Length: 423
Image (cartoon, rainbow, N blue to C red):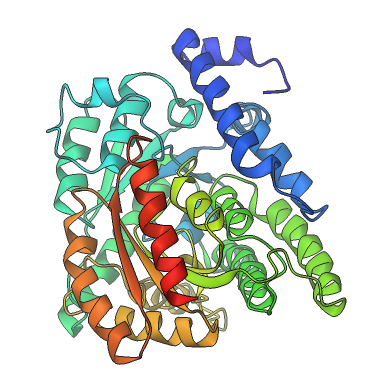
């Protein structure tokens, strides 16, 4: 961590010793996985800097915004309509959920057989390890799985929590439920900020977030080139940073990176010549959950796409920005977010079709389906994913793991065998 932010962390009541240990481990982990790559694009220096200051300058920006009267809203899921947060001049940030730190504290209040993501965000809060958590004026949960739904009840004893009800099907009555939830969330954000959301500020927010989605769509189109011009690890990092960084600044910097990638493609240069093209599918990977992509790209393969919430599920659809009235804009938000193909939905044929379509477009040799241990929705759905891919003639490897490093050698052996098989 380059800057000295000790006084700020102390004001935020972090456990300073434990937090220092976390940053030390994170720094080494990042160096081994990211900075060791050869021939990285110059534009990645910005992402490296953001990561190095993720608990520093970005948190400092949040504190300065709070001093000016702005509110900070923390979220865990791409289902939370961030346009409404930005329309009220609040700031939305993703919350820490990608490391084992805090597990011991989490397991005092959660069953041990809870998925690592839930244990992580509860543990980060209870252990006072996350300055983003401590900066939040509101934490927004959602009912995408039973584990998260019940964990928010526990979290509510330690933070201001608001929970959105996510429908489990996509019939007309489910749209009505979701429409009511979006409007209820709008009211909650207005009450939090003291600012009314109108057509003018909501229209600006829709354009702001759509611009960020567009630049990530552009990045995904460019990385589809053969040979691919950027590693899957770097694209995962870009997607992860998108949940923390200022949207306008992020869009500009990733746009500049895409310009560099286009130049690289025009020269016929790739990042991993001869590597087997694979796609990742399944559960989200929050910072610093980089274990599996690193193993894949250390085994003779390169990840050219991610079908996940930290990937195309979050960026595939734009919000229709043609509406002129507040009601039209709210309806566009309802429709856009209801197109998300999370495994919480039943039936979920959309996701199966998206996976097959994406694998074909990216010309991958195989798909690695990633599931967090005890994540029932994605574990159950992996069976149908494998069926759909098999019918399309595309091999799949199912991986189930957590955030620990204990299974690294076992996973590496399985990934290497899969890569050899599809080569």
